[in-house]
Image (cartoon, rainbow, N blue to C red; front, side, top):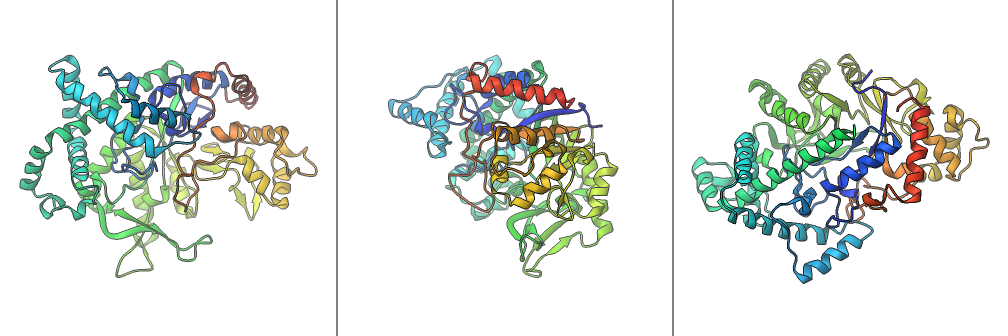
Length: 509
């Protein structure tokens, strides 16, 4: 059995929350009212997408510029003691962003940045105080990553967002003398980025206390790799290497595989240096959440890289025994003293699944993908040590999947999943009865943990992300009701009580 027992929870990106006091994007203050709704619905875990700092202007939570810290986009402005002021023009833009059905990043990014800059100015003018001392203490305690991150962020702004390898040579190669000069020249901006991380840390600590008070567990999402243009790649080029490009090999879905254009981890170099970087990353993530999802689990066993010598790609390490040893070593580090879930979707060799099972680490069961020889598996036979879900942030919603599925797929589901046996013939309509039966199938599964996307609970069609596409439709989903209204709206109260009943019946409450 997994830690925390047999439970169910909700998947919802933080940016997707809507509150009366936000700035057009979900922020930390939206969570406590949502925790209250979860309590009524008897959901014990909230899973979010990565909260790491992202590339300015890029809303993807997987476009990370640091393996440490939190995204200042999620700061709740009204929690700042320094106060927030808006010009008349900004108030108009703010109202437009808040009223939008989706996230208007073109408005939100500049509005929040300007407001935070003004608040920082007030903080700096305030002089010595207990708050100033707390900030200084945070900077010292987090210096192992914060100094590089803040300097990188300041330099990225100074060079108009050019990637770090296009900066002047002394800075791109991290010449100590050049770095010392840059630290003095950009001291104010460096301090601003340190302050943002301190504010994030304080506000997230407040969220953690709220979750604990309501008996809600927080599950984070840890991306496998960090972007090329990132503080970690710049400061740790020995470990995050750019001499080849990370991707995946050819498979049934892609004849040529995928070239992600990302750096690759030199785990051998890390091991020679005592695995300090990956241990520090794991320790920071473990301190941030109660449990976390480890993205692209197979990457910790083997990486598929392409370079000039092998343009079609190769695995690192190259042989299966070495891959197995590497994966077991990495996952022992990642899970040391904490709880994790391995995202083991896609093409995963048997030895990797065996290693995760040996370590007692749960994998994923996405119901629509869980098949053997083309036949859907009965969820009641899923491994107990696993996480079951009706979908992920990268899939279409359950309603869309059901309505667009071929007739034979719906027929197979209705033959295999006991909760849908009564549907003969299988209806093409996503009726309330079908909706309930599909959620029951997930909740009644043998998997110890069941995580349901918010959109699937409410039978919505809007999706969070469409892989392989770029545009304003991605990462812009916002929930329709405000979190403050969840306790009073007839539909959300009714849904909470309905979900609580299904949860009790599945013995997850």
